[in-house]
Image (tube, rainbow, N blue to C red; front, side):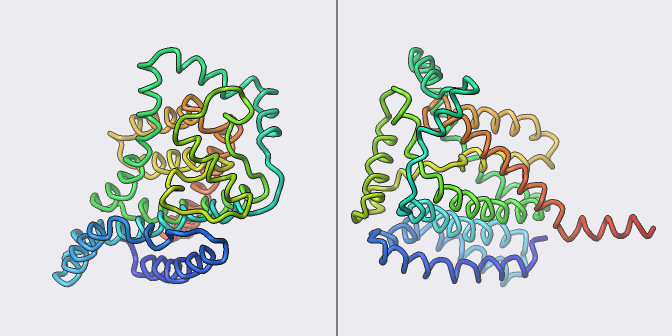
Length: 297
């Protein structure tokens, strides 16, 4: 069962992070921060009411999925702003070095994009797989909570937060717009939006989150981080183990075939996700107690 300590810690982190991000948005001339957190407020309010009712009625199985959903949405909104802050840093662009690393391994994103775009069906499938990440993340939050495996959901949420911090720090020192800028293929409409937003951030110009909703590409790939951590959280379900890992692998591949990331971004994202997942597993209180009991048994 998800502990009260987890909810309290998450709530305190959000209570500090959200006001801090409002202040940073003001200082860095990023408008629309409030709109980001109030978007879909009616859904979050409904979830919060159901969670409160479940808690009041002593129905923790009803309350838990909705409580963690509300926390996850708020956390997601908060984490999404961090790359925008990092993009304001003045470090030189790393697109050419990242592309050079890819070229040394023969893993050029542009080559895959040109091949995929020649077949419309493959292009559509690639985009659909890439967009499936959101559903995989939702399943990783809700299914373990519903089926009494809350520790997996708890580790998942904490791992995402940890990876977001590491990714933001790395992106601050290795900022990159995207492989379409150096590998000779036309960006999609969202990718062109990323370029425009990134250039505005780099130039210190005001940016509106209403027009920057496409987000910012980061090194390592946070899309791959989400896919791997989601599959890891759902692996305790035997009937889901193979499907989720296959889907996670396809999502990682789709970050290249859709042209969103360099190959080294994907490698970095996968390595970071596995490292954080293992660290979270080793620090899990239940497993620690189990190991201690086995030693003294």
